[in-house]
Length: 196
Image (cartoon, rainbow, N blue to C red; front, side, top):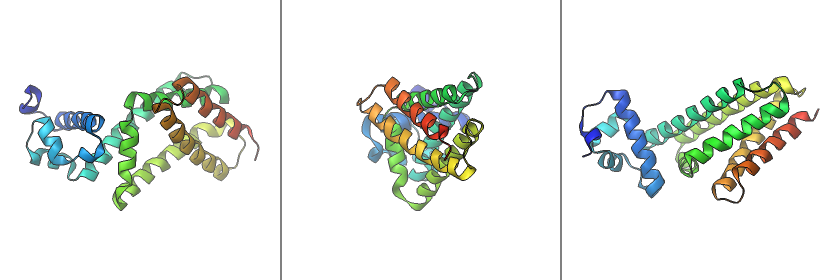
């Protein structure tokens, strides 16, 4: 057992340590290797501790995605606070923050996303995350367009789908982060500049 692992930690700190180990495990061995037993072994804790924190593998995957999601939303909100209130500037900041988060999270973010599509509970969780992103994007972009709310919402669904695809291209090094960000920004600008 590692020095940090063997010590008694406050529950919140232990959970964060387990999540750190889970991300390392996914990065090194992929999501198929991610089990609560394997997590406990790698973290140097007993199996009941990993089960106490996450209950199931699905619970662990959802907790991992929530951490990525919280980081992405925080980075985006911080960047938007420093942005001029023009569509072009907001689109560039949103796109850069999105790609930066994927770059720093690495390929494990897409692996975790794919693993979330394994059962009904995880599918419902993932759809809830996407719905929150759509609502956040629509709320952020609404002041910059004249589209009806439902049209804007649908375009935000498309923007997020495009962002996922573009970020995959970036992670496999088919395009640079700058190109990925600029491509997404141009899509946002074009779709929101249209009147219908």
